[in-house]
Image (tube, rainbow, N blue to C red; front, side, top):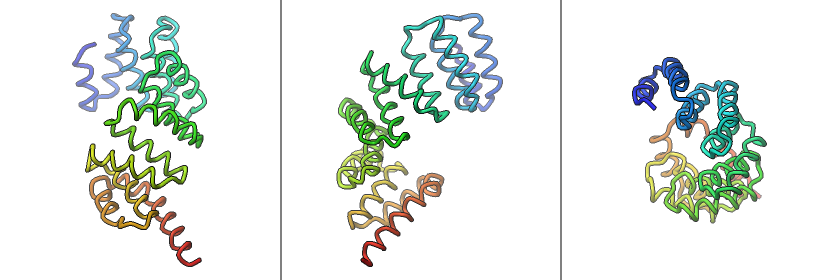
Length: 219
């Protein structure tokens, strides 16, 4: 695939990059990576329908390409069609034991609020890639959803060792500190500084837990 197309995209010329990649695929219709990249472009632009059509056509031509199936599962996940993404990622896990597919299957179950299932696949992915930042954060998030703040903290601590400036890890670690009655303000301050948008989007969770803790103290 031509590097110039990727540069167009990175420079913000999104429509031009999409058209250039469509034209490229007419000349190189067997380039699997190009299909995946075009689907990623379309998904990023939230043109889910066109991305789905593209990937399904590609899978008709190349049914044994897991990269195409993974891209389709990711598309469904981004479009919040979680039952469809679950089916695809489960099939990929069965066929290939792909760590990426296990991670995405865990993410999908987490979004479906099936957290015990999510934890199984997240832990499997974490065991295979113990230094993966996103996987440690995901395990922590799932354990928080299950109310196991002590265990969640251990995985979030691992995440912070990997990236001490990660806003989500700082925020979620702060939540575990708060619930476990440990000093937490520093973590929220750092999270707000390094990831203000994330903090603003998730501060309601902090307020809810603070309210719960205050109510508990007054019982």
